[in-house]
Image (cartoon, rainbow, N blue to C red; front, top):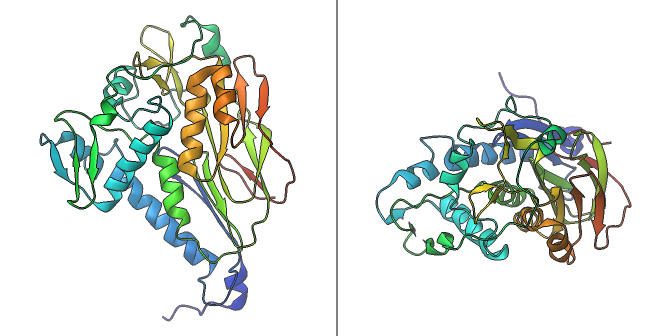
Length: 337
């Protein structure tokens, strides 16, 4: 049977899709075409979803058959790598450089040691307020690892290889969602407006350049909280609430590590949202600010703006953050209104 032809009404109907990928919630929003010859929004959303599913399958550290896992298991110092893997590893190195080594892609063994071994389901999550009341280190800013082993990773696009010392494993968890959102956004040229949200790392754009209010979920309750207005660019949120659990000894643990110790970082901040031109940069700035504590976060977020939340739940808006909403987007998911 022949499929029904796409009508003009179908071509103008926006797409709004939510799915579960990368251990988080992903949302794809595609508005009407801005000109003739552009696909229908649903067709574009299909294209983005297909890419994001491929990204997870090929680059997840939780899949033994992924290209990233095969790279980490390979005993050779020089390993052939696809363009996508090379791009992801370059993004991880870029995040490390921008953060001064705080967003370190070589902490995979430390993540496993603190208990983050399996894909996150949320079943293990404990209440953030309860976790902060327990016994833990005094809050202090994190520091880069003295070895700076991420500097030993080399991506050679001409040769199509990645070089690193044998046994050095790479984790793209600190950059992957932002990198994926940025690459996915390249598939959405020609639409009036669009957004790709990969678990709170969201890239926004479109030919109309309309302003949109991105609603940030409360760091403690997960309910709607503060908001940031974006015209074109990205906003990312990094925090402790989404992945925090109790270790075997009863102490709270989470996935944001202090590279200098390999242990969960408690810096006095529990959540940071950052603005930037790209999702990779926004994700990196948010994590760097979170790891740097209140004073460091103010300096890091001053250029593009952002919001921090401390352990007492007090928000601080940094930089110029105008609020002129047109479309509201909840992070990491929700409905447009």
